[in-house]
Length: 292
Image (cartoon, rainbow, N blue to C red):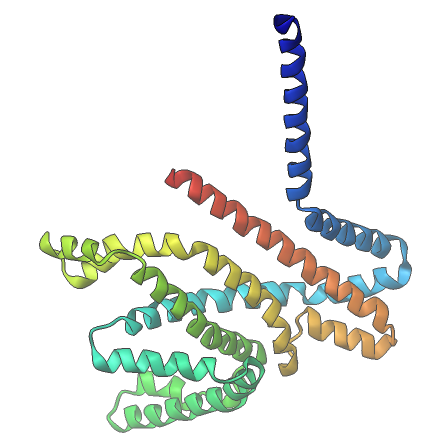
């Protein structure tokens, strides 16, 4: 009797376990992501079938290239600034460590929108004036081939898009500096000591041993900051840079179709950030698999 009922009992236990596993999978399933995709898909269907939304989309997408170019350029420069500043933050030199800390704390203590105004309308003109002074000094000592471009440089020749890239680069450079600093400090100091014991200099050990590991550790954080910068490029519209936000504002002011314009703008940003976030998560999973 026991032998006859054992297979049935095992089947019931297996079915119960399968049901629990299914319930857990349904519970853990990212329903929010499905809902997000449905919102994006239905919005683009609306854009395709509704002439008002379609006109708004066709007009706004003119600024898409500016948004993408500004994001890529600013993030690349911010990576360089952030890496140099991050190294300065852990430097043994009192001067460079305090200089890097001053820069980071200054940027973190001022709102980004205010920094964009300050860098675009005060910082860049100040640098231009300083280069003019250097140009006149070079001219006075007879170095005319270097002096000429510096003397002729004028503030009005600096395009607002360039100023926007500089502002975003300087601002995000401070944020990335903290990411690089944390990444470098996450590597055990014993590796630096081992490299130095093999005859490497500090910078050789940093370049060949520490930085490759640190950069791999901070890749997810860098990816998240890239997504954040894409969203923050909307702030440069205050400088009249013709990104998708500025173009949308122009279209809304001309057509008075605020609902269609800003709904389309939201969906365009949402689409880009979702795609980039998925790419960041894919790279992160691939990195973890390669580590195992």
